[in-house]
Image 1 (cartoon, rainbow, N blue to C red):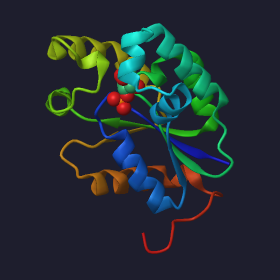
Image 2 (cartoon, rainbow, N blue to C red):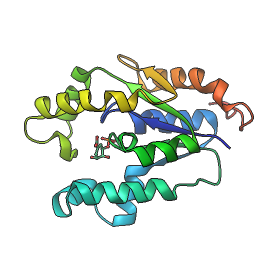
Image 3 (cartoon, helix red, strand yellow):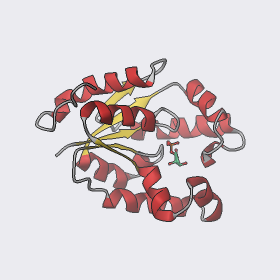
Image 4 (cartoon, rainbow, N blue to C red):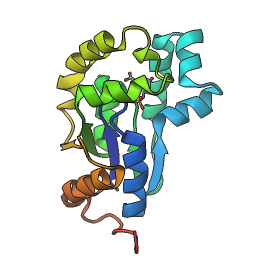
Length: 178
Ligand code: S3P
């Protein structure tokens, strides 16, 4: 069974597009950041603050290692998840990995309106520009890159749907009426 994994930099729309895509495919949806938060009983911001980033990464790795959905699922991951080699191996094993790509300007614009991201605190422009460049090679290892700049959530989900169709042959078909 092939799942669909969404990766890409923070604020590219992995969760919103993933939910829409899951509905369209008739798949379940899971967001690994939400799983980590549920399992830890705290938000990611609290984890970074109280336990540190290394502990968050440890929990992230554990969550990814244990991830084994029983039904076809769209899996939205955190922006740093796919950068880790063990996570990358596991996620590739789970299915087709799609990287959503949006310009850094759009990302900076979005994170400025939401202060829940610990890595975007302080001088966000400088920090995120560095991270963006650093992570590009890892994102490039996704099976499919999908440019979503300027697209609505619906349009982005449609574009992903079209691009991954060949990878999902043999899985459940599109949900009726979606
Ligand atoms: C992170 C991105 C966040 C979250 C955590 C770390 C990152 O997820 O996993 O704050 O390293 O880029 P989003 O990509 O959903 O913001």
